[in-house]
Length: 399
Image 1 (cartoon, rainbow, N blue to C red):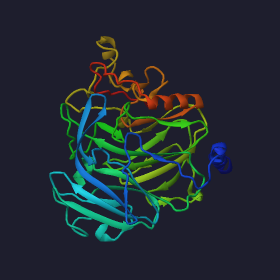
Image 2 (cartoon, one colour):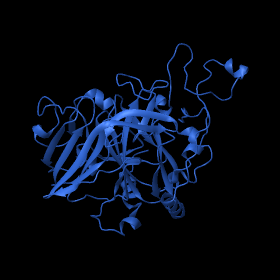
Image 3 (spheres, rainbow, N blue to C red):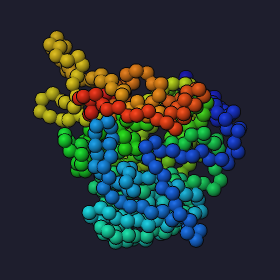
């Protein structure tokens, strides 16, 4: 069947028309990165001044699974920085790591002395030292910052840096989300990742593995943008359930509409950003995940003999099933309680957590009533519950 371009883009442009009409076309939806904070600047003589610190950070990537990595300002990934096209920017960068480092401004058009290329434009910033970066940004695109020492990149040192356009282009989005893709090799009883690894057993969006990823909440009919940033060793085919989308931008900037076409799986390559947009026209809890099969599971451990996923299989101790060649392969491990404190998980079907291992999150398209309930819970979230015994290294996954 031929592609109905007019019909596809008509749905994309008009699906949220009633909501878009309520605000000026130049209004910008707030950029939201689930789990991650924004770094607010000071205005000093007209310059937007940020304080950014590289340091060791201990965090939790799933219930009961600790990660000790290298990030910025107490966060892995680091906080988001946002400026506007034409802004003068100053970053006061402090190095609290035990070795030299530097920050590269990925996708930025700045003087080479401010680019962060150690050896070419600057010397490394030594432990305990501060380095000042300063430049004017006469561009607009989705950029990011990261250490320009490669093994430090694999230790987690990365964050979003958006340069918003002076004159926004349409169609206006109602929701604007950001996801940072990372990979970790965590051995048993070790919270420090193996940065030399070529295979990975924990995969994260914004520093969280499913089912601990916080869903993106959208009201029915809203137009949604998701910016996905990948800095690891693997390319990731990211698949969205329930909708067709168009790729509308990259780390180089926004694409002309003539280059948009319908997709529902997009390859996000290493050091790339891929922006997708769609109209959320159907209520439901829709998965967004990497479609590499091993990336939909947590805590896989290679070993001599059968592969271990780090958890018991279901059903246990069944001699007849053990006779089947290849058994066991997958498992079903519902454990919703450790994630029930998140308001964004309110109303999910019982057992949802068993399907959400690895690099998996959700776009939850909700009714106005459900949206109001989630907003109410955000103001007063329920207490967190402990994971069930043996489920601290949740290994569930769904195809």
